[in-house]
Length: 114
Image (cartoon, rainbow, N blue to C red; front, side):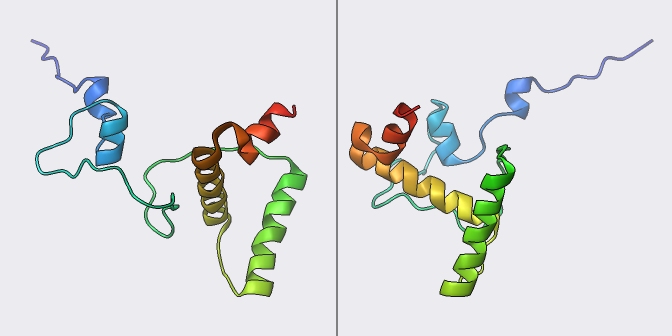
């Protein structure tokens, strides 16, 4: 007699496990969790383990520009950062500007230029 294995549903496998992800998914916070909005400017995560991944395709010229920026930071400012951290910092700056200036942000201006 064949036995059927019971597997968890996709919702259980891919459920958010951190506070911020649960809140953005609309789930109620767990008991004892702080639900206050973060104060101050948006900050990138820095040098921590990252559980989420985004793949971004860039042109050869954009990749060279990114690498040149990384090398300039190292040479001129004594900052050794990898490309991932450089991108996370840039994203944090753009999102902070969008939150602060809305339609007048640099991101909106650049995206509406075509």
